[in-house]
Image 1 (tube, rainbow, N blue to C red):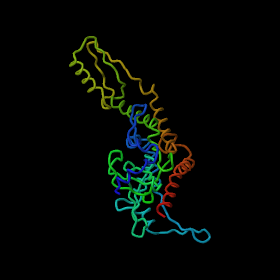
Image 2: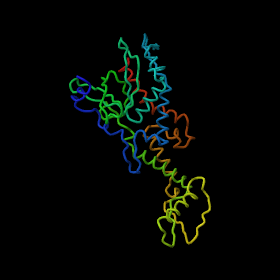
Image 3: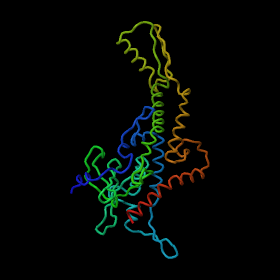
Image 4: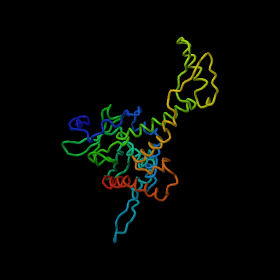
Length: 324
């Protein structure tokens, strides 16, 4: 039985939200949010980088419990895989960073476990979360992983791996087998921050001036309207044109349309959205510039250590289950 026929007998994909989480979904702010587009949010980028790089800098050591509960470090092949070179394609820092970042963004991170002839782990190959779909095998009552060449919704699988051959780091999930996507579930907070960033960029692109209307006492032809609009934008749009004096002739008047950023509390809104995103990833807001940087450094550091501890425990438990 080939892999396609095998999947056809499986009853259902595992997990409640796995069928739609990789597509950008619209938010009430008008910005579509997905795992990749969310990284253009400076707050999301800062949080994911902070967590992933911190975890990647930590050594994953293996110890054996000896007499009197003394610990003896084992410098074996698995220690080399986890701390030096999990595969010929990348070193351990990149591997741990990729896996942790994927788990933060998608709720799941996957790596194929390739064994040597003796059955011991010999290679760990990172697989993007968008190319993996967990399935429940109704005959063996076990989880398998379908691997796809591209996005799993648009291609046929080309390989299936049993759970024992897949290192799977997952976040909070419905059934303990597939993690939720924080970006998918919290897209309103992230969309608000992205909308604020785009509004700020557009505001400065227009020379720091809100949108407005040019009023002319007489009727203009379509060509005259286009020429007037083009001339006005050439002289008064863009940061380099800020402060240029406008000369209005023939009864031409300018009226402001948009509310200005001060009245819209632009800075306060952006600060609030950064703090919201920091809370999603359980990162101290001051560590991503969203709160007073004069906060007690020791207290902030302890708070951050508590926030990444669950990720470290997830790594430890999965390594114990699948690699040792």
